[in-house]
Amino acid sequence: MPPPPKIKTKKKLIENMTDISCHGSSRTTSQRKKVKTLLGIVRDLADVHEEWIPLSAVKDKAEAANPGITPAFVDEFVEKESREGRLLVRDEDGQREVSLNE
Image 1 (cartoon, rainbow, N blue to C red):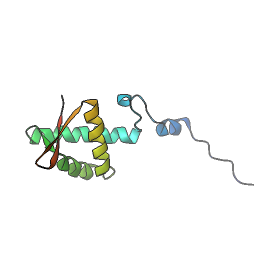
Image 2 (cartoon, helix red, strand yellow; image 1 turned 180 degrees about the vertical axis):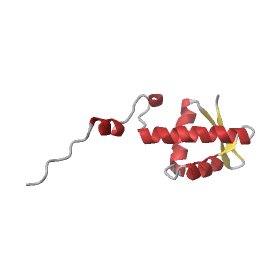
Image 3 (cartoon, rainbow, N blue to C red; image 1 turned 45 degrees about the horizontal axis):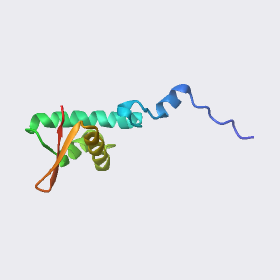
Image 4 (tube, one colour; image 1 turned 30 degrees about the horizontal axis):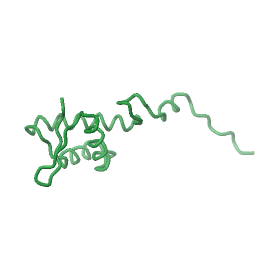
């Protein structure tokens, strides 16, 4: 007779749930942590650069800070945050740049 299926604990179920309260979206806990990391990176780079930050610099620093943050995730982050009005995006000389809208 096979063993009974494992029952997930309440804590484990909560960890796996999608949080719909974060910016009115459906980001998982892992995604929220990545977004928080990316916002910190953009703030840090804003201190180094005058106003506009090359997106390539954000991607490089993000990948070094957390290998789980892929360039594709950074692109999604930029698109979503720019739609929400928290980031400004421009293309300058063929290079995409971002700036905090604070």
